Image 1 (cartoon, helix red, strand yellow):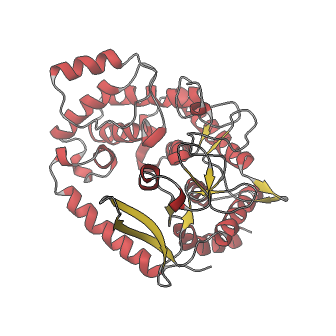
Image 2: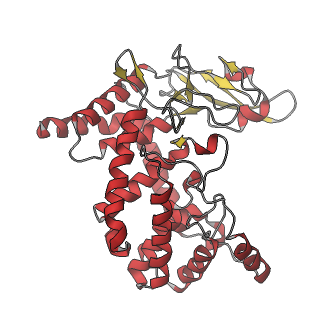
Length: 364
Protein backbone atom coordinates (compact mmCIF):
# COMPACT_ATOMS: atom_id res chain seq x y z
CA UNK A 1 0.00 0.00 0.00
CA UNK A 2 1.68 3.18 -1.21
CA UNK A 3 1.61 6.16 1.14
CA UNK A 4 2.72 9.62 0.05
CA UNK A 5 4.40 10.57 3.34
CA UNK A 6 6.10 13.66 1.92
CA UNK A 7 2.78 15.14 0.80
CA UNK A 8 1.25 14.40 4.19
CA UNK A 9 4.12 16.03 6.06
CA UNK A 10 3.71 19.15 3.95
CA UNK A 11 -0.04 19.08 4.60
CA UNK A 12 0.40 18.82 8.38
CA UNK A 13 2.99 21.60 8.38
CA UNK A 14 0.70 23.82 6.32
CA UNK A 15 -2.21 23.06 8.65
CA UNK A 16 -0.14 24.13 11.65
CA UNK A 17 0.81 27.43 10.07
CA UNK A 18 -2.79 27.95 8.97
CA UNK A 19 -4.16 27.47 12.49
CA UNK A 20 -1.69 30.00 13.94
CA UNK A 21 -2.54 32.50 11.23
CA UNK A 22 -6.28 32.05 11.75
CA UNK A 23 -6.04 32.56 15.51
CA UNK A 24 -4.51 35.99 14.98
CA UNK A 25 -7.35 37.27 12.79
CA UNK A 26 -10.22 39.38 14.17
CA UNK A 27 -13.44 37.45 14.76
CA UNK A 28 -15.26 38.89 11.74
CA UNK A 29 -12.58 37.48 9.43
CA UNK A 30 -12.95 33.92 10.74
CA UNK A 31 -15.44 31.29 9.65
CA UNK A 32 -18.10 30.01 12.02
CA UNK A 33 -16.57 26.54 11.60
CA UNK A 34 -13.33 27.84 13.09
CA UNK A 35 -14.91 29.96 15.82
CA UNK A 36 -17.22 27.17 17.02
CA UNK A 37 -14.56 24.64 17.93
CA UNK A 38 -11.02 25.73 17.09
CA UNK A 39 -10.41 28.95 18.99
CA UNK A 40 -7.83 28.90 21.83
CA UNK A 41 -9.30 27.19 24.89
CA UNK A 42 -9.19 30.34 27.02
CA UNK A 43 -11.35 32.19 24.46
CA UNK A 44 -14.40 30.10 25.35
CA UNK A 45 -16.03 31.79 28.31
CA UNK A 46 -14.65 35.22 27.37
CA UNK A 47 -16.93 38.22 26.92
CA UNK A 48 -16.54 37.97 23.15
CA UNK A 49 -17.54 34.29 23.19
CA UNK A 50 -20.59 35.13 25.33
CA UNK A 51 -21.71 37.62 22.69
CA UNK A 52 -21.37 34.91 20.05
CA UNK A 53 -23.32 32.47 22.22
CA UNK A 54 -26.33 34.80 22.16
CA UNK A 55 -26.46 34.36 18.39
CA UNK A 56 -26.16 30.58 18.73
CA UNK A 57 -29.14 30.52 21.08
CA UNK A 58 -31.05 32.85 18.80
CA UNK A 59 -30.55 30.76 15.65
CA UNK A 60 -31.73 27.51 17.25
CA UNK A 61 -34.98 26.45 15.65
CA UNK A 62 -38.07 25.43 17.58
CA UNK A 63 -37.35 21.85 16.49
CA UNK A 64 -34.08 21.93 18.44
CA UNK A 65 -31.62 21.94 15.54
CA UNK A 66 -29.85 24.67 13.56
CA UNK A 67 -29.88 25.72 9.89
CA UNK A 68 -26.77 25.43 7.73
CA UNK A 69 -24.39 27.78 5.93
CA UNK A 70 -24.80 30.69 8.35
CA UNK A 71 -21.91 32.63 9.84
CA UNK A 72 -23.57 32.58 13.25
CA UNK A 73 -20.84 34.61 14.95
CA UNK A 74 -21.42 37.63 12.69
CA UNK A 75 -22.93 40.72 14.31
CA UNK A 76 -26.70 41.09 14.09
CA UNK A 77 -28.67 44.32 13.87
CA UNK A 78 -32.00 44.65 15.66
CA UNK A 79 -33.78 43.93 12.36
CA UNK A 80 -31.57 40.88 11.84
CA UNK A 81 -32.48 39.59 15.29
CA UNK A 82 -36.16 40.11 14.62
CA UNK A 83 -35.89 38.12 11.39
CA UNK A 84 -33.99 35.28 13.10
CA UNK A 85 -36.65 35.08 15.81
CA UNK A 86 -39.37 34.89 13.15
CA UNK A 87 -37.41 32.11 11.40
CA UNK A 88 -37.33 29.92 14.50
CA UNK A 89 -40.49 28.19 13.34
CA UNK A 90 -38.93 27.13 10.03
CA UNK A 91 -38.32 23.45 9.44
CA UNK A 92 -34.82 23.96 8.04
CA UNK A 93 -32.77 22.42 10.84
CA UNK A 94 -30.20 20.01 9.39
CA UNK A 95 -27.07 17.93 9.91
CA UNK A 96 -25.68 18.95 6.53
CA UNK A 97 -22.40 20.90 6.29
CA UNK A 98 -21.72 20.36 9.99
CA UNK A 99 -24.86 22.18 11.14
CA UNK A 100 -26.36 21.39 14.57
CA UNK A 101 -23.35 19.30 15.69
CA UNK A 102 -21.04 22.32 15.38
CA UNK A 103 -23.36 24.54 17.44
CA UNK A 104 -23.73 21.85 20.10
CA UNK A 105 -19.99 21.41 20.46
CA UNK A 106 -19.66 25.18 20.85
CA UNK A 107 -22.32 25.22 23.57
CA UNK A 108 -20.59 22.38 25.40
CA UNK A 109 -17.33 24.34 25.46
CA UNK A 110 -19.18 27.39 26.74
CA UNK A 111 -21.01 25.45 29.45
CA UNK A 112 -17.78 23.86 30.68
CA UNK A 113 -16.30 27.35 31.10
CA UNK A 114 -19.31 29.21 32.49
CA UNK A 115 -21.90 26.76 33.84
CA UNK A 116 -24.61 28.91 32.24
CA UNK A 117 -27.85 26.84 32.35
CA UNK A 118 -29.03 28.44 29.08
CA UNK A 119 -26.23 26.65 27.26
CA UNK A 120 -27.13 23.34 28.85
CA UNK A 121 -30.81 23.72 28.00
CA UNK A 122 -30.02 24.59 24.38
CA UNK A 123 -27.58 21.69 24.06
CA UNK A 124 -30.14 19.19 25.36
CA UNK A 125 -32.80 20.49 23.01
CA UNK A 126 -30.30 19.84 20.23
CA UNK A 127 -29.57 16.37 21.58
CA UNK A 128 -33.27 15.52 21.72
CA UNK A 129 -33.50 16.76 18.11
CA UNK A 130 -30.78 14.24 17.18
CA UNK A 131 -32.43 11.35 19.00
CA UNK A 132 -35.87 12.15 17.56
CA UNK A 133 -34.48 12.36 14.02
CA UNK A 134 -32.91 8.90 14.04
CA UNK A 135 -34.65 6.23 11.98
CA UNK A 136 -35.56 2.87 13.54
CA UNK A 137 -32.84 1.33 11.35
CA UNK A 138 -30.22 3.57 12.98
CA UNK A 139 -29.67 6.06 10.16
CA UNK A 140 -30.25 9.82 10.07
CA UNK A 141 -31.80 11.96 7.34
CA UNK A 142 -30.29 15.24 6.20
CA UNK A 143 -33.15 17.36 7.60
CA UNK A 144 -35.57 16.92 10.45
CA UNK A 145 -38.57 17.19 10.35
CA UNK A 146 -38.34 15.24 7.10
CA UNK A 147 -38.34 16.96 3.74
CA UNK A 148 -39.54 15.29 0.57
CA UNK A 149 -36.93 14.10 -1.89
CA UNK A 150 -33.38 12.88 -1.36
CA UNK A 151 -33.16 14.80 1.93
CA UNK A 152 -34.87 11.87 3.66
CA UNK A 153 -32.19 9.37 2.65
CA UNK A 154 -29.72 8.09 5.23
CA UNK A 155 -27.05 10.74 4.79
CA UNK A 156 -23.32 10.08 4.84
CA UNK A 157 -22.78 13.04 2.50
CA UNK A 158 -20.43 15.67 3.95
CA UNK A 159 -19.96 13.34 6.96
CA UNK A 160 -23.40 14.21 8.37
CA UNK A 161 -23.98 10.85 10.07
CA UNK A 162 -20.37 10.44 11.14
CA UNK A 163 -20.46 13.86 12.83
CA UNK A 164 -23.54 12.80 14.78
CA UNK A 165 -22.02 9.50 15.85
CA UNK A 166 -18.77 11.09 16.97
CA UNK A 167 -20.72 13.50 19.18
CA UNK A 168 -22.79 10.67 20.69
CA UNK A 169 -19.63 8.63 21.26
CA UNK A 170 -17.88 11.58 22.91
CA UNK A 171 -20.84 12.05 25.22
CA UNK A 172 -20.90 8.33 26.13
CA UNK A 173 -17.15 8.28 26.80
CA UNK A 174 -17.12 11.75 28.40
CA UNK A 175 -14.57 13.18 25.98
CA UNK A 176 -14.10 16.87 26.60
CA UNK A 177 -16.15 16.58 29.80
CA UNK A 178 -19.27 16.37 27.64
CA UNK A 179 -21.31 14.19 29.94
CA UNK A 180 -21.95 16.90 32.51
CA UNK A 181 -24.00 18.94 30.05
CA UNK A 182 -26.35 16.06 29.17
CA UNK A 183 -29.63 15.65 31.04
CA UNK A 184 -29.84 12.34 32.90
CA UNK A 185 -33.00 11.31 31.06
CA UNK A 186 -31.14 11.45 27.72
CA UNK A 187 -28.00 9.52 28.70
CA UNK A 188 -29.42 6.07 27.94
CA UNK A 189 -30.83 7.26 24.63
CA UNK A 190 -27.38 8.50 23.58
CA UNK A 191 -25.83 5.06 24.11
CA UNK A 192 -28.62 3.29 22.23
CA UNK A 193 -28.57 5.75 19.34
CA UNK A 194 -24.82 5.36 18.89
CA UNK A 195 -25.06 1.57 18.86
CA UNK A 196 -27.89 1.63 16.34
CA UNK A 197 -25.95 4.08 14.17
CA UNK A 198 -22.92 1.77 14.00
CA UNK A 199 -25.20 -1.15 13.14
CA UNK A 200 -26.71 0.94 10.34
CA UNK A 201 -23.24 1.63 8.94
CA UNK A 202 -22.53 -2.10 8.79
CA UNK A 203 -25.89 -2.84 7.16
CA UNK A 204 -25.50 -0.16 4.47
CA UNK A 205 -21.97 -1.15 3.43
CA UNK A 206 -22.05 -2.21 -0.21
CA UNK A 207 -21.25 -5.92 -0.56
CA UNK A 208 -20.02 -7.30 -3.90
CA UNK A 209 -19.71 -11.07 -4.36
CA UNK A 210 -19.89 -11.52 -0.60
CA UNK A 211 -17.13 -8.99 0.13
CA UNK A 212 -17.70 -5.65 1.90
CA UNK A 213 -16.51 -2.59 -0.04
CA UNK A 214 -17.42 1.02 0.78
CA UNK A 215 -20.57 3.16 0.97
CA UNK A 216 -22.63 5.51 -1.15
CA UNK A 217 -22.98 9.13 -0.06
CA UNK A 218 -26.61 8.39 0.78
CA UNK A 219 -28.67 5.23 1.16
CA UNK A 220 -32.40 4.67 0.80
CA UNK A 221 -34.02 4.97 4.22
CA UNK A 222 -36.21 1.91 3.56
CA UNK A 223 -34.17 -0.53 1.47
CA UNK A 224 -30.71 0.70 2.64
CA UNK A 225 -29.55 0.52 -1.00
CA UNK A 226 -27.31 3.23 -2.53
CA UNK A 227 -29.48 6.19 -3.55
CA UNK A 228 -29.24 9.32 -5.67
CA UNK A 229 -29.20 12.88 -4.39
CA UNK A 230 -28.85 15.83 -6.75
CA UNK A 231 -28.90 15.21 -10.50
CA UNK A 232 -25.11 14.89 -10.66
CA UNK A 233 -24.91 12.74 -7.50
CA UNK A 234 -25.91 9.29 -8.71
CA UNK A 235 -25.77 6.02 -6.72
CA UNK A 236 -22.13 5.01 -6.54
CA UNK A 237 -19.23 3.73 -4.53
CA UNK A 238 -18.10 6.88 -2.73
CA UNK A 239 -14.38 7.59 -2.71
CA UNK A 240 -14.96 10.60 -0.44
CA UNK A 241 -17.75 10.04 2.10
CA UNK A 242 -16.57 6.49 2.83
CA UNK A 243 -13.29 7.79 4.27
CA UNK A 244 -14.62 9.19 7.55
CA UNK A 245 -16.88 6.16 7.98
CA UNK A 246 -13.80 3.92 7.95
CA UNK A 247 -11.91 6.25 10.28
CA UNK A 248 -14.85 6.24 12.71
CA UNK A 249 -14.94 2.45 12.74
CA UNK A 250 -11.17 2.31 13.26
CA UNK A 251 -11.58 4.48 16.37
CA UNK A 252 -13.75 1.84 18.08
CA UNK A 253 -11.55 0.40 20.87
CA UNK A 254 -13.02 -3.10 20.94
CA UNK A 255 -14.29 -3.81 17.41
CA UNK A 256 -16.48 -6.81 16.76
CA UNK A 257 -15.61 -9.31 14.00
CA UNK A 258 -18.21 -7.59 11.78
CA UNK A 259 -16.56 -4.20 12.29
CA UNK A 260 -13.11 -5.63 11.59
CA UNK A 261 -14.42 -7.25 8.41
CA UNK A 262 -16.06 -3.97 7.34
CA UNK A 263 -12.82 -2.01 7.82
CA UNK A 264 -10.61 -4.53 6.05
CA UNK A 265 -13.04 -4.77 3.13
CA UNK A 266 -13.12 -0.99 2.74
CA UNK A 267 -9.34 -0.62 3.03
CA UNK A 268 -8.87 -3.26 0.33
CA UNK A 269 -11.35 -1.43 -1.91
CA UNK A 270 -9.56 1.89 -1.45
CA UNK A 271 -6.23 0.24 -2.18
CA UNK A 272 -7.53 -1.23 -5.44
CA UNK A 273 -9.16 2.01 -6.61
CA UNK A 274 -6.23 4.41 -6.41
CA UNK A 275 -5.80 6.75 -9.36
CA UNK A 276 -2.07 7.04 -9.85
CA UNK A 277 0.16 9.69 -11.38
CA UNK A 278 -2.45 12.42 -11.94
CA UNK A 279 -2.98 15.88 -10.48
CA UNK A 280 -5.06 19.01 -10.90
CA UNK A 281 -3.87 21.56 -13.44
CA UNK A 282 -5.25 25.10 -13.21
CA UNK A 283 -5.22 27.19 -16.39
CA UNK A 284 -6.93 29.99 -18.32
CA UNK A 285 -9.22 28.55 -20.98
CA UNK A 286 -9.99 29.85 -24.48
CA UNK A 287 -12.75 32.06 -23.05
CA UNK A 288 -10.27 33.74 -20.69
CA UNK A 289 -11.75 32.06 -17.61
CA UNK A 290 -10.00 30.23 -14.78
CA UNK A 291 -10.44 26.52 -15.39
CA UNK A 292 -9.08 23.19 -14.22
CA UNK A 293 -8.37 19.74 -15.59
CA UNK A 294 -6.69 16.50 -14.59
CA UNK A 295 -3.29 15.84 -16.15
CA UNK A 296 -0.75 13.02 -15.99
CA UNK A 297 2.26 13.55 -13.75
CA UNK A 298 4.62 10.70 -12.79
CA UNK A 299 5.62 12.67 -9.67
CA UNK A 300 2.04 13.06 -8.42
CA UNK A 301 0.64 11.17 -5.44
CA UNK A 302 -2.45 9.01 -5.50
CA UNK A 303 -6.00 10.34 -5.71
CA UNK A 304 -9.46 8.83 -5.64
CA UNK A 305 -12.59 9.83 -7.54
CA UNK A 306 -15.68 11.11 -5.73
CA UNK A 307 -17.88 8.58 -7.59
CA UNK A 308 -17.25 5.05 -8.87
CA UNK A 309 -19.75 3.15 -11.01
CA UNK A 310 -21.59 0.42 -9.08
CA UNK A 311 -21.37 -1.99 -12.03
CA UNK A 312 -17.97 -1.33 -13.56
CA UNK A 313 -16.11 0.11 -10.58
CA UNK A 314 -14.77 2.87 -12.84
CA UNK A 315 -14.76 6.58 -11.94
CA UNK A 316 -17.54 8.67 -13.48
CA UNK A 317 -18.60 12.30 -13.61
CA UNK A 318 -21.96 13.99 -14.08
CA UNK A 319 -23.33 17.32 -15.15
CA UNK A 320 -26.72 18.64 -14.08
CA UNK A 321 -28.32 16.47 -16.79
CA UNK A 322 -27.54 13.37 -14.71
CA UNK A 323 -25.77 11.56 -17.57
CA UNK A 324 -22.62 9.66 -16.61
CA UNK A 325 -19.38 10.67 -18.28
CA UNK A 326 -16.04 8.86 -18.16
CA UNK A 327 -13.96 12.03 -18.18
CA UNK A 328 -14.11 15.32 -16.32
CA UNK A 329 -13.49 17.07 -19.64
CA UNK A 330 -16.91 15.88 -20.85
CA UNK A 331 -18.92 17.91 -18.37
CA UNK A 332 -19.63 21.64 -18.45
CA UNK A 333 -17.56 24.44 -16.98
CA UNK A 334 -19.86 25.15 -14.01
CA UNK A 335 -19.90 21.61 -12.58
CA UNK A 336 -16.32 20.88 -13.60
CA UNK A 337 -15.11 23.76 -11.44
CA UNK A 338 -17.84 23.82 -8.81
CA UNK A 339 -17.61 20.37 -7.24
CA UNK A 340 -15.08 18.14 -5.48
CA UNK A 341 -14.54 15.40 -8.05
CA UNK A 342 -11.30 13.99 -6.62
CA UNK A 343 -9.86 13.53 -3.14
CA UNK A 344 -6.68 12.41 -1.44
CA UNK A 345 -8.46 11.94 1.90
CA UNK A 346 -8.11 8.10 1.85
CA UNK A 347 -4.39 8.57 2.50
CA UNK A 348 -5.28 9.14 6.16
CA UNK A 349 -6.73 5.63 6.31
CA UNK A 350 -3.47 4.13 5.09
CA UNK A 351 -1.48 6.19 7.58
CA UNK A 352 -3.54 4.83 10.48
CA UNK A 353 -4.18 1.31 9.21
CA UNK A 354 -0.86 -0.32 10.32
CA UNK A 355 -1.32 0.79 13.94
CA UNK A 356 -4.94 -0.33 13.84
CA UNK A 357 -3.84 -3.78 12.60
CA UNK A 358 -1.35 -4.07 15.46
CA UNK A 359 -4.06 -3.14 17.94
CA UNK A 360 -6.38 -5.78 16.53
CA UNK A 361 -3.71 -8.45 16.86
CA UNK A 362 -3.25 -7.48 20.51
CA UNK A 363 -7.00 -7.73 21.08
CA UNK A 364 -7.13 -11.12 19.39
